[in-house]
Image (cartoon, rainbow, N blue to C red):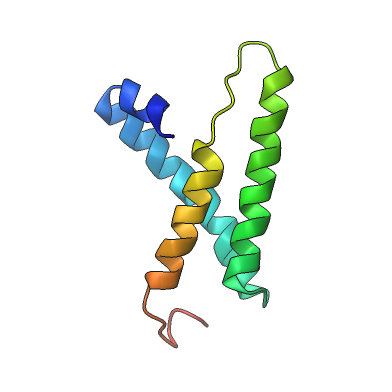
Length: 90
């Protein structure tokens, strides 16, 4: 995991990583706001990312890796550790 990020220039890798964190955290947060449990929200996003990675096996020029679903799970742990506040949950 994260091998592609480690092989990149650090500026480009950091930009790509931050973009992915935003793109994966947003649907997790939105699903959570609809009333789903955090675990369910993370599993939905991680499963969709795993399906996309699985489809890349059959696409020429693409390399599937486990980084994206793993990143979604790590974001879920981050949300779990984030202190709950009434201002953030409204």
